[in-house]
Image 1 (cartoon, rainbow, N blue to C red):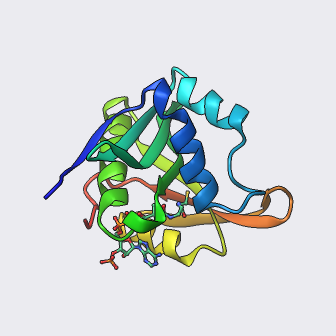
Image 2: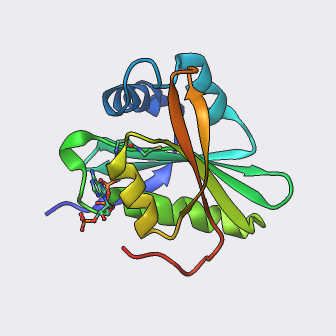
Length: 155
Ligand SMILES: CC(C)(COP(=O)(O)OP(=O)(O)OC[C@H]1O[C@@H](n2cnc3c(N)ncnc32)[C@H](O)[C@@H]1OP(=O)(O)O)[C@@H](O)C(=O)NCCC(=O)NCCS
């Protein structure tokens, strides 16, 4: 039996993270090389990677923002490893980092047509604040979701 290990991002992970992101999201909303490179390199952000027996199977990026805000940039789990609590593990770890950095609320954007992701965030205490028109390439709306209660996590 193998165990999933959550560890900080290392530059050698980049290609695999890009691949997972482009498998998880449609080409027009997945991150470009430059965008992904910006987030994994930014000093205000932290990228955590889920690994099982040497295979990177998911990742999360969270950024610490001014005015006590945390921002989840993305969370992606490889399709063959979804619904195995890996996303929940990644989310819990990045939330802990953001709360420890002084966040009083954590927010994120998610496509309105992704009921799975919405169910996932709802389960972890996020509520819809508003709908942002054309957030993705002026063509797809996003829900802005937020969490303020550190204790609400239903793994
Ligand atoms: C959304 C995502 C990160 C969840 O990660 P995961 O490891 O699959 O999720 P978990 O196993 O921790 O799921 C926990 C719960 O979240 C909810 N959930 C997760 N995926 C779901 C789906 N596709 N449909 C409905 N509910 C879902 C369920 O309540 C699930 O519990 P259950 O399996 O007992 O029903 C993952 O499915 C993913 O990478 N999707 C593609 C990328 C994406 O949409 N990212 C989020 C938007 S930024």
